Image (tube, rainbow, N blue to C red; front, side, top):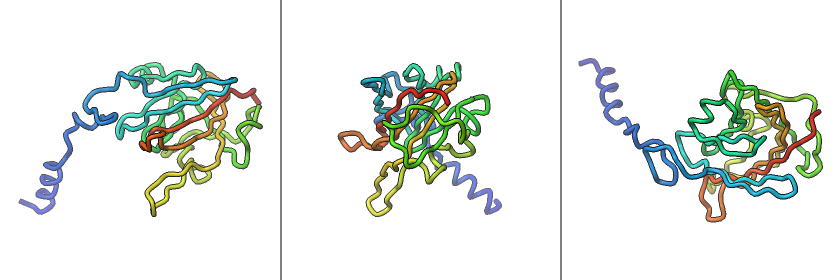
Length: 193
């Protein structure tokens, strides 16, 4: 038997059981039924806690509503704006979904509270990687020394699938208990350009 064929056989023998790869908080093999977002609204500002703990399935949000879209609903309606999977944040357009229309502008040195109107230009669609993870160094810094993710001070303006404009600020990657991939996200509607 050729050596390359032996390596292929050995590698495939070690493949993971695909029925157990869709995991949320240790429950594997089924799509989650519990909410993956919690929302608090105060004076037009939405604070969301996103459960992005799955390593294989994204969680989806419609910023205009605001509401969570379950996996099947997001795929069927294409009404989602952002998706979250661990540290990856994607917008519904470009490389993520060629039929999506969502675009993102990245602003540095801009405060969340001071921004009231969306910029007229500077919007990008996702490429092979998402705008949130590539432009201006991405939304976080990963410290290899302590293996911890720290949010960078960027402000994002998202032009949604319904044509609205929202400012989005990424918060902590960890919840109050220190659980990773339970991301705090703050967003609010903006006036159009």
